[in-house]
Image (cartoon, rainbow, N blue to C red; front, side, top):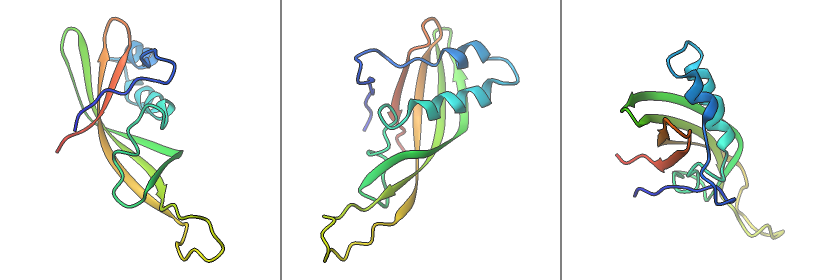
Length: 125
């Protein structure tokens, strides 16, 4: 399942700091910071769930798995660490334990080298 996520504002999210840092020693750190800053409104956390029913975006972490480039695009595969819960009805007699689960998914990012615009999709396979 591949899809592009567009920020709620209708504008494509941008990773301009990462684009500027490309080729420097600070690239990976900057890229991880900007990926985490995209948050649950852009990252496909809900689609990447394996344990819970609702993905949370309060403790995101990112790991860069690989990068490649073409003249127009930087391609990044990143691992995203986050938490989820199994949402119950919140009734007094609801037996559902509302504990957090550790979640992990991989995403593909395509960063336009001219504009910094990024397309994010849940990685396949």
